[in-house]
Length: 430
Image: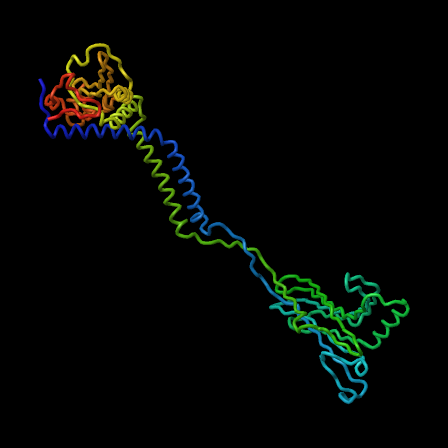
């Protein structure tokens, strides 16, 4: 005897079927993507741990090296020159002192007097010595390739002072009789019988500083060349700018400069760690909760997918016994049966009472029996689900297909074979 299910019972059964299908799909999805998800989550966890370490365990972040000026001191120097007028002229009376002139006349001021002043500037110093030397060099040089054909050196001045304080000047005075040097060059070329290249007249200045400056031992030496240009009875000292002899010395130290951790690292690292740990924990809980999918789970999901795909060409009818008589062939999947029915242009019929799909052609019947729902197939505990005890055997199978409840099926008109709809047409329902 059949009992008519209430509308509430139908809704409960529908929810039960949906829950079962949802559970099985989660099992399969979890098994399919679990390994990849674990790899991604472990990478997130490792990245988060690395970023967090950089932001907290090493809060200054990644060290960057930089050069920083530790001390600065300067070796100082300048040169001054002048000449006295020895022969009176209409312009200069005898004895006139010319200072730092751009040009001197050899006939009236043959000798140039100069001083080279050296020293240093620093914050502190101890036991510092300053040495100065001045030499006169005259030579013949090829202007194209710098070849020196001959050279003469003549020391002009030398001095060495100890215990020199910062800013204290040390002076080396020198005199150069330009007229006498010019005559000396003429004699050399006369003796050589030739005058290759160009003659040069140079002042070579050397400065040495040794001692404790700004708390450290320093020892430096500098040299400079000051040309004296002679031409047409004149000469000039090309001493350059007044600061040409200042040499700054900067001492550097390498320091580690690190950028402070910004909000991306200080917050992003812990968030990545939380995401990695949370995701791994969720995977563990989900794996225990849903378990591993069985072959029955996968078979049933494949059937449900086929049913959804071919739903428009499946007709739900209560078949007469004669419709299933005769030779039968059982197919493995609903998709195969639907493909066969479409190929032979014959209706695919689902009988909810027998829980079978059938395609009849002439005296031959192709039959597909759907797998049992996962709640029964995989042994899930459904005792706490409402009305679970009422779904047994073929009735549970029919419910798994989304068909009407058993009592509702009796309201369908039972067609005869001649009245069965063709493939793709809906079955008759009240």
